Image (tube, rainbow over all chains, first blue to last red; front, side):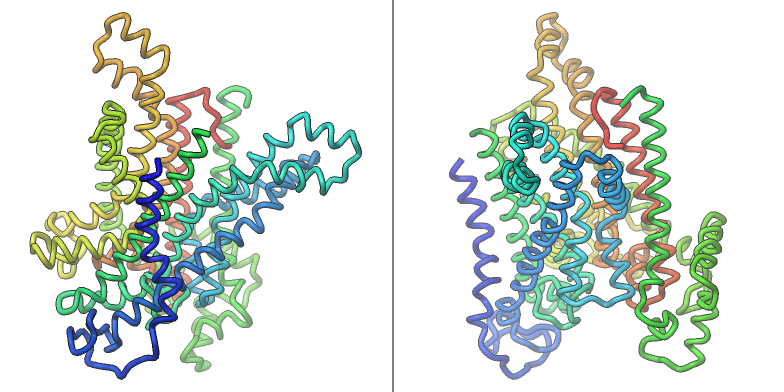
Length: 261
Length: 317
């Protein structure tokens, strides 16, 4: 069991450390060299506009990781109250009003929604965060609603109600707290999905500058030089693979453990 | 909850609502443009002529509800409006890109089911053994990897280092079937995520089903293992997997867009990305409706199939 954690931690550790600490070691931008060259002081060569690939790699992980984390948190910030409210309310119309639109939204493919918005707004990093959070809300709210519905039908909730506890204390203090385990598991799964979506959107040019220091953008822009200088593509691609794979291995190890205890 | 008829009616109603929502959402796109839509879309060349042309092409002078009615009525007849960039009808863009995308999607789905189910059954039979551990770790790892990163690595290894396969489909046009070598990498990349997810679900379902009392009972009767596995256990194991198959439609669609961009295949995904880059809103809207409605219909189909396989399970509707 421990080996699963260790494997996940090692695989995710390298890209995560690079993403978070890399910018501190990157240093200032050096003089631009010719595009797609190797050697000459650049030990991973230069990219499509002649910048040092190693420096771009050090700088390029932060955006992916931060946008993914912020989007996951934001999705829950909206989904949690919506799901909780619709599980605890006794008014059917309110529940239908809250949940039905989300059922309908589930039908729209997530990347399509992001591309649609990109066609009109040309979003930046903040816009991409909001969009990714938005497409994750329907599913997250459904999970909160299902888990809260189970907790809300327990006798303890009935007892709290009869004791005259406030709605807030019953809803957040008891039902909300009993959801932590389910939500922690779902948040892990959701994070892998969000990482995938953020990286893919960046690869397609949504929410990033065309010459941004971002692993996904590097893969896209340096593809033209794949024959002469593969490192500018292969290194960021490997880092993205390690990041997503490692997160998933870690989340799965956590889920397995939870099931056994 | 009561009776299959009611369920079917509810599920169909949801499908209709989802289709309507897709159409409304896509239409709302132009309404969401800040300020005057024609000025916003003209972008870098805001000369009055171009603005007037956009206004004319999109009927921006008419009130929104009239435009929505006209647009929706057009959609029903296959009239998707005209492109802002070229003035060609949007439907020609769709028919041009349809072939390659359909080919990619069809090949993927045709390979997905046998490979995914096969891997799932294989790992379930050898649960805990070295084969199971190896395949399970690989499927778990690859499951979360974005297609573009995997695809670029495959190109580096198989096209550049080994030289076995062409790196992109450039120069082959839309007739990809005549060049099967160009299809190997795209289909492999498209398969990566859905196969992993399907195999894992089938594995879990098969392990449960083979452990169940009815499988033990069938074994006591001396029914051969092959028949128990494929005749009795597999149909029960497939029900949750079919549900997931519907979710993978979403992935397949994301995947098609990425794979077409990566391997330069002139399909609907490429048309969509070009239109997004040019801010050609009518083309984006037309393609979004096609993609959105396809997702709704495929989801509906998967729900009907999984309902048929396991009528007692609760299916969201």
